[in-house]
Image 1 (cartoon, rainbow, N blue to C red):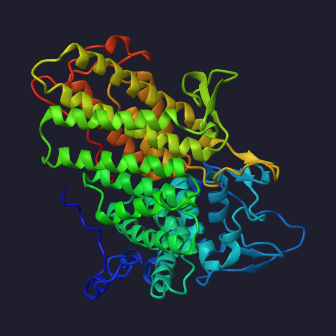
Image 2 (image 1 turned 180 degrees about the vertical axis):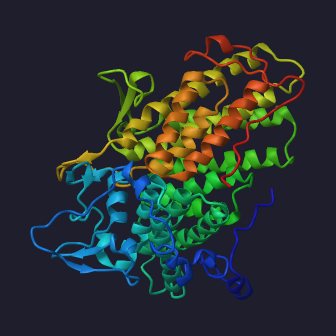
Length: 517
């Protein structure tokens, strides 16, 4: 198959050089907030949104017995004056950081009035320079704006986001002297901002950021191999995000992405070789899916064979999981909607929950691909019927595991001793959206599971301010409706009433999760 070339800038293409990402500036600066836009944020030009804010608790600055020295933003409006950067022999603080650390981080050293005290740096690198503070603050302000319905906060968030983007481009002009790991963290913040914003046109900018970050990550991976340094978990996690993008856009992995996965897999210092092995299998699934959707592979027998080969690989991968990847199942003390069916998973590290959820959503889609093409066969054998039952059971089990893992992502880890393994500090709220949507839209899952997924996505959207969750609610409902129209019966947890559903009456229909627009 001819693989799609990863987008690169015109400057690097002419020079026949490897592109580090973000070199074509004009495509990225469409969000730049100018003085005219910022003036709209001032109360004299726009009504206050205080009524909306009264309905939702807002982060407040920590109180100090002595008036702190205040460093206000360069546009001294009352709105921006609320976002003071407070310096009093402690790290800088603003409402964006407070919201970010309260809602998007799993580790908190101190919580006061249900708000995280960010005066103790949870991410040491964050406070190394103001530009990294702005990158994180822009994400927090965007989320806070979505929750409080205050457009003024979003204007300020966009300005910080634009400033971060400019600085990223500046640093990429001299990659030889840039701190690439720090730069990559800033790029991740740019991507998270777009997931939270999800405004018209955000899909385009999200794609640009993902492509730019992919080029940067390839440079980092290549340098890590030469310098005998590890591929970090953050970088591994980002690879999964790139493949989700490929799936949504029905594209095969580019040759550059394949090269990146090879660099990761052969790096002996990779922080998690088990996760990197899962990436290798995922590449082949994305490739197969693109071939089917693109019409390059049409024979249902060949498609079924390829799916079964990948299924075998995943089964072997699961059987060989290290003991630390295991989890326990607990019963909630009291029935509540926070735990799916009153049951939840306990993981030794949230990282394993994230990686297992990537494995789970791929297996759901893999088995749906098998079922949809099995229905195209003129006649089903006894073996086909047995495989159908197995696939339906796998889909239901994977969807159930995804739902039961979700409480771990909402949990806040506090008072960890030095001997305890620190879980990933980002809570993974942004990473839960796609697995949840796939689980809720999965073929044959119960109405109860579907409703529970929608309720979780609504919480992520409405209470945590991540708008892309709202977009995925629409996609999940559309997929569910298509399955119902196709004659799919819903199931009980054991799938007993789905042994021989009419998958595709009069033809075939395959699940297609549309991209976030």
